[in-house]
Length: 412
Image (tube, rainbow, N blue to C red; front, side):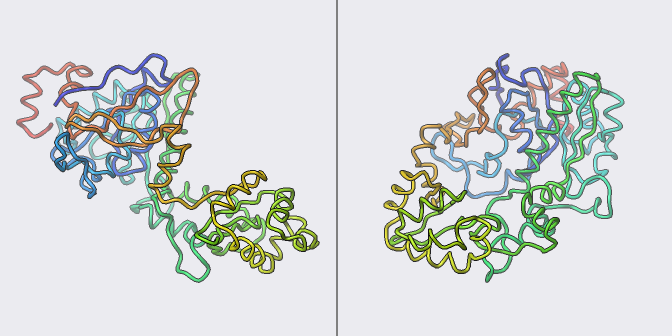
């Protein structure tokens, strides 16, 4: 395999930072992909012959330059751009030794094995910190490193249920619903990246790395945001409201003459303007609805009045009027329609990344826009083991003969 990764631009924020990525699936790879977007050198360690679990989570599969289906899944492509793939079998002593050597040259290590899972390989935090005291070591688990559930495996879906997130998702009449993407994994990845950056900044002052303990359950609970505080302050568990908002009214989806739209009235002045363009003078003058607190208290009376008004015109007509009046509103797009939005096109949110197998790998542009340290053109996610020889030669100085021996022994 060839190594198509060029050195990150010195202008990139994390140029010069090396991350050893022992994670797989979504939360860990999402964190390291973000660090890679920012210019860090991400060395992704994968099991020979198998790799990250998500490589097999298709269809759909990427097509090569001839239009033929590959074994590169869309799921894997979503979380692994800007990385170098190195295949090492950590179950073998020689593989463990190679990973330890790579850890000695790295600034950050990210892993998402079960609690204690890497200790038997000598790849746990204490073992590697003894070799490299400057290493920032980030562990991502379902429930954290302590507590009665620490030893359990944790998956996004079950964590959405356990954390209460599903209890506030879905309509009142339906069963509790999970969010349509594995959002707890994504949010955990974001929190992990933030924690790693904070630890690197701390290292600038102390010269020492540290241990970062990230739990999906903790992240899900923290991400309940206002709903958690609605319970902690009010003492009553929030209920499912469908597309309605627990603290703001009207703030939900409504049917129009030809479809649906989202009306997101954020303050009393916006509500007064809405009543004018919706020809609802009696609603505007009703003392129950003048302030948001009253609208929340009397939502059962107000919402049918708003709904009846919105059915009188089409989605397009309403969106034009609401935009002119400065009232937040928008369509309910499919993902295809979202990528076709003028704003998405203007911001270049859909990527086409040249792929080593020919053709291009689609991607979604990072939302990070830094004026003085721009993100370089991203690299397509790697094929399994694409950079094994290049990394082991460049970082560890292994000769072609030594790499061939390790490969024949099943280590690489």
